[in-house]
Length: 169
Image (cartoon, rainbow, N blue to C red; front, side):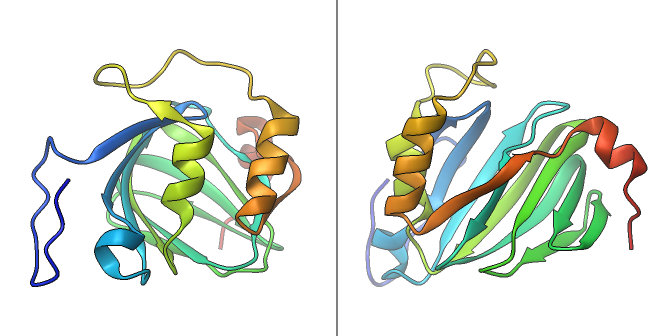
């Protein structure tokens, strides 16, 4: 992807795609392109996917859902997020989500930028279109890398079973 400080365009097939956990993350704009202001990703994940509960200490995070559905927890609050909805997750609050109707495809913005660097360090270049084969994460490695980017694990992933019993606002 090229960058021009006078402006630039990212075509549908030119973003940097990474397989991160069991997702596909395509960096549309990162710190190098936004002078550190934000990271914008297009991402997709399969039904039942959910990252461990975690806390971002330095960045805020928002998801805009294009396809599919998420159940999201942020602190003691919870929502079901469907196409056309945006959920905002402030820094410093433990949060998690699970794909309740998938696959899901959405846009993710984190501010300030830097999240894309963690994805690159923990993930691997996508070898083809679509999602990677499901795998078991290396938790000690993930914990260490997350700490370098001021993120920390705060518990296990939210499950589909939990999401069915949690109340949505």
